[in-house]
Length: 467
Image (cartoon, rainbow, N blue to C red; front, side, top):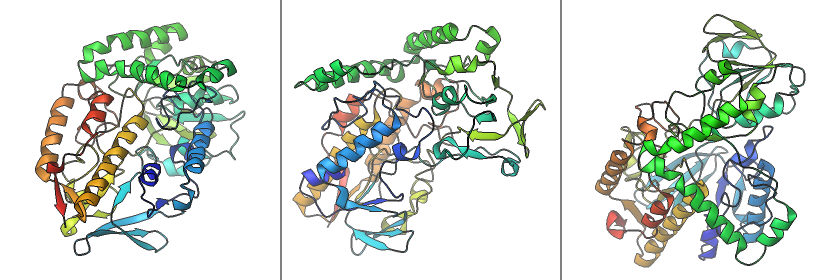
């Protein structure tokens, strides 16, 4: 967003960052084995291709380094304000601008606000009786405690999501015993990861080659959307690939049964790994599928009454997703709080603008997440749309732009009608895609090129211009 503002000649903006450095997900998540699960050449900006990725799926440090390189190249470092946690956004009906308050007591005024807080950054801990009484070290995978050595320890890992399948194979060889508490098994497909040889990197530096590589990856990933967006029956190919992967890597039928999901593939996020299943077949690893009834000072007790003595607990229990935006203190026109505007569920127009909150734009807002392709593609589409909104303000000399409530309602009605028969709603699972009412507030139900096409141009008649 900052790069595109700067390129369009807007220089009067700041980036408020709560932490001491940039990077978000790729700054915070430093657990062993942390890497992207989207091919690197697609998980990057279309205007800043990187022919030098070391692997097909880049490790955390490399993605973070790429982001810093972009900041340097496009000269946006002076716009950062670090250690600035935003505590409230309040729209001023009289001045037609936003007052932004930060945790250190400072206030700023801005004509427009772009929320780029991301979806997966507030760690979620499970509500388990006695969790606070545990005497040993315990931490969330997103806040990995590198001062705690796991060598020779008895470790409990709670959760089997995208983070767990990356760090479990890394820590399993060095711990004395690893007990993995699994509530729901994920569907896992092989990870086609490999180190990119220097010869290939040289080729990618030739004119047009990195672009061709990116385009081919894009269309391969986009074909995965057929089962998501058209009919869950089309997911059978993906399911048979995942079943074969499980059979090939887990010879023990009892363990294989524990690791076989009972819902349609794609209902939860499809994970990719080629070393997770082998790690679970190790002698020092056990998988517990009974729920957890309580945590004691030195142990975890499962629902069948078995007490598992452990030295360290690692929570791989994901993030607050649908309620992350709900917890923000945002007040729009007429003193209406965002929570009241969203009392029937979070929604926005194309996931970007919300009625009653002029000149407030969301990146990765409601229903713009993906199950099949790179979310960076969605962010770029949203940034272009926000720029279009700002150009409209400049052209008309209006002070603010506010989406019409009727247009927002009609858009979200069509969106939910489309989501209803699809795998996320009908696949027979509970996932973080759904809110507390079971409504999907997270996923875009179509192809990404569809979203790109629909957000290419703002429709001025969908908006009220405020002068």
